[in-house]
Length: 87
Image (cartoon, rainbow, N blue to C red; front, side):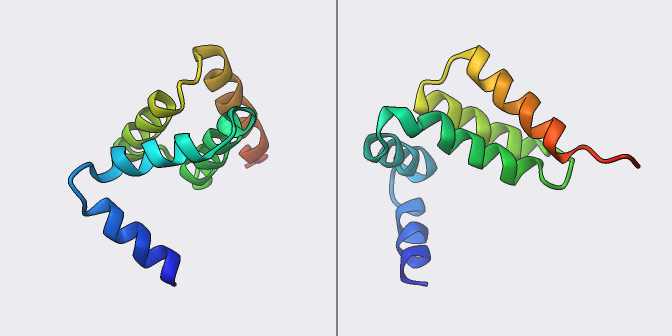
C-alpha cells in the first residue's frame, strides 16, 4: 500500500507519468528494459483489447526505455500469440 501511495504522489508531481517512467528507466539495468516493456504490454493486452489510452502509455514507455522497433514488434507478437484462444 505504501509503494502504491508513493507512486500516486509521484504521478501528481510536475513531471507526472513521464517523470515516473524516467525514474524507472534510470533504475533498471539495460538488460531488463525490454522485460519491463513486455510486462507492461502483457497488462495492456490481457483483455485482448487495446484502448487508445493503453496504446499511448505503451508509446511513452517505449520511448522512455529507448526500445527499437523490432524489439517492440517481437514483444507485441509474442504476447498476442500467448493470449490467443481457440474461440
